[in-house]
Length: 168
Image (cartoon, rainbow, N blue to C red; front, side, top):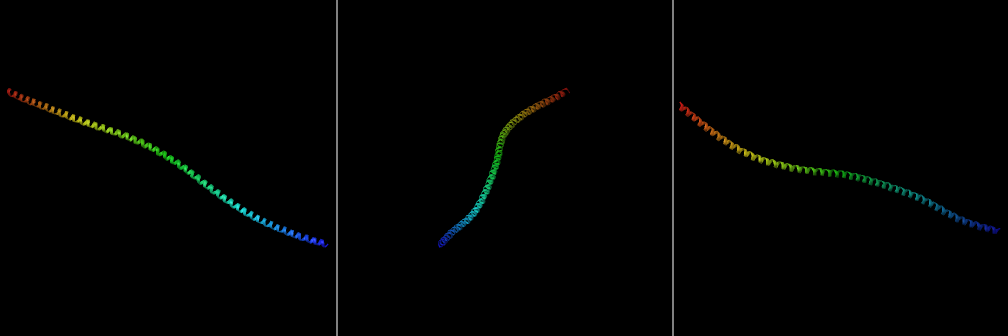
């Protein structure tokens, strides 16, 4: 029995050592499990933070895309307005060019008319001068005729008087 007791004691010691080893392993496993849980929690926190950062980046990217879209829209509107104004300016330039051409044409016509009027004025002056000369000639001719008639009348009257005097 002593043998059995010693064997039991040895078995008990072996079991205790084995139990201590298993307890240590269990403690290590618990520590590892706690570490795993802590790491899992930290990993979850990091994932949550990463997700938050990703969401912020996505929001900022969406805002930037909206800003870019707004800028593109504004650019397109500005370009359309620029094209409208460009067309208006082009139309106005064409109208101005046409009006300038018409103005030059009218100016040329007026210059031609003025020249014609000056020519007619000169012609009229020449005609007036000719008429004045003709009138003066006619006037002189009439004066001569009147003077001759007066002389004839005076001669006639003098002769008539002489004749009356002779009859008396």
